[in-house]
Length: 314
Image 1 (spheres, helix red, strand yellow):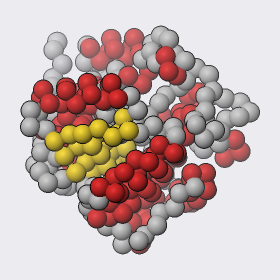
Image 2: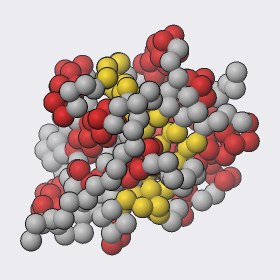
Image 3: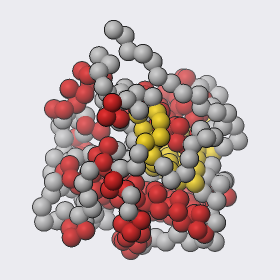
Image 4: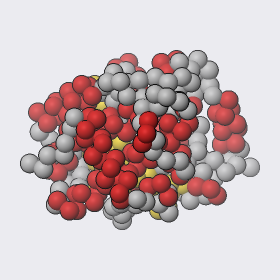
């Protein structure tokens, strides 16, 4: 039986400037294309210029009049994050939408960022934390909505406070869960602090469910020469419309969270099907590991210290 198509309406975004991380391929590319087709000026910060140029070409094929441009960003390098922040602040244009979508998942062996952090924690969470801090003046100027992409891996697990960098005993999946829990706690704390300090930013979370994205595919740069075995099952189930989503449907929760006028701050959006693995996007119950404000404040403070960045209000 053919899979029933799932889609949403993205409102007119003319005059809006949007930044989407991780948009050089897969789900992020689809998110950026929809924003551009709705009239937004879209900035793609990418690590690989060749993939970035290919992404721009793809977007302009579906949205010929797209206003889209590339910037350089490696979220695993705080120096690169700072350089992008400086460049965008020098341009001086307000940012209205920021979708923190980029991420890495389950390197087979422990790897570190340029700054010595465990790769998943450093890229998925700390890199984005530092980016939002650097862009705060532009986000405030645009009254921005910040949407941070977490994962169903944040549904369980905890932050390994005794060994944040997994120096003593690396577990790729637990480290991935930690990175997404920390990232989710940050996104929720950002919204609370914006309200408390009058920053004018709204922040929420999204997750894509489970779909055959590139996260578990072969990634030689992560030391993974072949697809993770689970991706074959994911592709098969997705193709048959069984439980799981598609790359197309997986992008929809983030688009709802970031663009729907009725989307709420401080909440989580994801697929509404069984187990929240696939299906139309909707508001979700907050995952238990993301509910503690004390944990969120601790994540914020530790992240400021580790990244050397602070959320300056001026």
